[in-house]
Image (cartoon, rainbow, N blue to C red):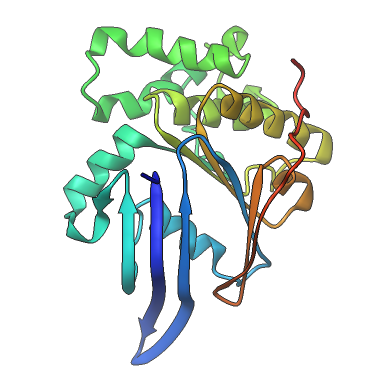
Length: 235
């Protein structure tokens, strides 16, 4: 059974009586353990699709099964529980608390979990080890480089051991060298068994995936597997 299964998803927004369709019938499935990039230019609908996939928004019509659950049957608290337990988010803007240490930032999702409080720090430290930032535990975000801040955001996404990580333009605020470091980190997580879905308009970031879905004007214009395995990361 697919981890993610979409059937004919549409999304329209209404403003002042005017209906604006954004997605026009999106269908695909993603198996657990895949590394998928969803590409498209600005305005193509890929961010809207991300919000639906991550249970941050609801489709207008169509069926979305996540982990075999029909998401249309879930109320908002149930959707929040699934996000916290199964989904990790990495955003372009990092979204770190400025006056909070690296360790405390990574611990934040645990406050909404069933994890005992005495285990918060240890779990956060393990997540930071995965992104090679154990030496930055007590630093503030302002004391880190852009790449380090994004890796803290990745550690925060990891801390609840989610099934899937959604990365929304994870290299958008970074130079090419730093972006490659961040993508190498994400690629390592895939090789450790995580399902990765990267939303991007950058070919260099998309090329890390094993499958690339391209969205154009709210429709899938291509869905292709990348046959050659990637080895960008340092083994």
